[in-house]
Structure formats: structure tokens, C-alpha cells
Image (cartoon, rainbow, N blue to C red):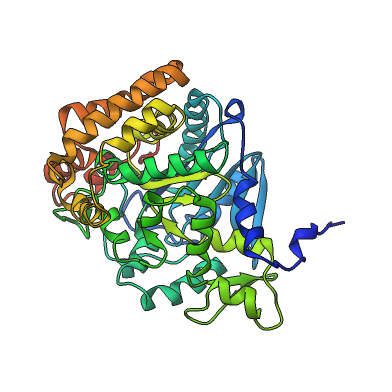
Length: 450
């Protein structure tokens, strides 16, 4: 028998209730963990075409392969769209990108263990299906029109909405892939300090993790085309938030902002689109077609906001391209070192403290193209990125010294100035015109052609 939680049906009566949602994430430092999520771009191993959902080589077959070996499938209209396994989850993005949301851990070496186990299983399944997974933050082959959409109702609503609010939203949905870290906070003051730090360095993180230079079978001239895509996806709900630098009452400030971001939909046994421009503030005041706003509605709405640092009952780091397996595992310890050590957090925030918000916006525009060569005030992003990695190492040495070796790949990038995008461009030029060779060269180890 399904028991309905009281909060599922009780209407929200005040903004204070929404603010209190964030306070529900408060945790003492001894209980802080870090979670990691990443999306992989898949291609058919023989052609480089994106996999469809249906059929013997489809994404649906891949999910069923995992479901047969344990976990609870999530079914929507007879389609398996996700699989939960304890605190981890496998899901699909709109263009068939395959996502692992790992369990939160207190030791980042456990993330490595989880990733090794996952890659082993994904490799076995994918070789059977003839699918290869590429080390990239953007699908390098073909155009958006070549990418089949996954059968997920939520994405149907977003697909119709995106062209009204930006020029690149459909590309974001179908062709990009990111790696993300999720971190805890102690209270509102701690959440405010961590959000300010994250927003202070988000462009530096984008440059360090850049891995999306190939677009529609050509070298694009971008270090992170994925980050460029986000600059005109939906600016009402994405990018930088100026109040993060001005206000310490981050729970209230974020709530006030989120209340005025238009909603995509409400969920009542299925996703129901709301009119364009319909905000959560209006939903609280008027309801919609007989429905009233509840806390699950608020949580759902928060999940549809896409700023560089997203606040829920934890903080999400969202500015990085997915790339190599070592760089996937490096983000969690990098952010642990920066955000879980107060000295490092303050030092990282200070790196760009002289920049105005307008200068930060300009930096977010130039980093996707110029990467380390972009200027942040009087300094290059490359110079600041080297300092940032050193600060992260210093912080990690105090909070989790056993994980220091996981920073090695990002330290190499910071020291040499040679990004994953630079490496990818070299591979692309070395195998120009030979798609099978490119597929092999760009594949993750263990996730390439049989």
C-alpha cells in the first residue's frame, strides 16, 4: 500500500515554507559527503550515429540489461527511463546521453571504486549492443537533427518550451554532456560562503575541464562548446546569479529568484505543461487548473533551474564538461578541497574578488572560446586556474589527504596549460576523415568498440 506523505497534499501557504526547504539540507561537518554525476555521449560503434531508444541496439535495451542485474526500474508509458540502485541512479538525457548519479561518499576513493565497477558493467553491456561511449562534453558527429529524442514525458514539455526562450536549448538537451559534483552545507551562512566561492571560480572550472571542441565533424574554435551552448539556452534560469555576491541570506535570495522563474510543468501522475511565463509565485497565488502548490512542486521546480551553481538541499557544481574518466573522478576531490576547508574557500573566493558582476558575465562569455587565454581582470584564466588547483590541493590536504592523488590529472592540465580539448583536437586532426579511427581514439578506455 502506498502511503502519501503529508507534504505531498498540503498547500504551501508562505514563502517562509519555501525558504525552510533549503534549511532541511543542513548537516554538521562530520556528516558532509560529496556526490558525483556524469553524462556520457554514446555512438554506434560501427557508424558513429547516435543510438535510438528502441530496438536491439537501443538505449532502452541498455537500461534493461542493467535492470536484469539488479535495481529498481523507473517506468513511464511502458518505457524504462531510469534505474535506481541503492543511493545511485542510472538515467537518460534527452538525446540518449547515459547518466550515472553516484552515491554520495565521505571518501572520494569510493567514487573511483564505484566508477571502475560501473565502467566494467557498462563496457560489457555496450559491447554486446555495439555502442561506444566517447570522452567529450559535446557530441562530435552529425547535427542536432540526427539525434533521436528519448521517450520521456518531461523532455517533451521542455522540447516545446526551449525555442521560446533561447537559441541553443535543444542543443543543450540533445548534444551536451557534463560532470557534476554535489556538496553539503552546515547552515545558511555556510551555504552562502560556498555558493559565493563556487560562483567566483566557475569560469576557471569550465576552462580546466574543457573537453568539447568538435562540433558537427569540425574543429569549432571553442575550448568548451558545451559552455557556449549554455550562454543562450534560457537566461532566466541559467548562468550566473548576481545576488550570490551581494547577499548572505542565500536561502531567501535564491527563493525570491526561483519564485519568479517561469515553470515548465507540474506533475500529477504525469507532466502537465503550464502557460509560458507562468511563475511559481503566480502558482502559489492562483493555483493552476484546480491544483495548488505543494512542496513536491517546489522541489520539482528547483530541479528545472540551471544556474552554474544550483541550490537544493545541497549545492550542485554545474560548469564542467564531461571528459576522461580521471577528470570525472577529479571534480569531487577538487570541490571537496575548495568548499569543505574554510581557508581554501576564502582563498578561492578572493582570486576573482576584484571583478564586477559585469566582468564575470563577460568572462563567462569568453572562456568557452579562449579557455586559459581569456583575461579575468589583469590575469589570464590559466594563471588563476593554476592558483585555484594549488588552493584545492592545500584544502584537500587538511580535509581528505588520502584523496590528493586524484587531483593529478587536473594538476597536469593546470601546470602544462594543455586541456582535454587540446588533446581532442590533436586526435581529431590525426584521424581526419576516418570515423572508425576517431571513434576508437575518442572512446573511454573499456567503453570502446569490441
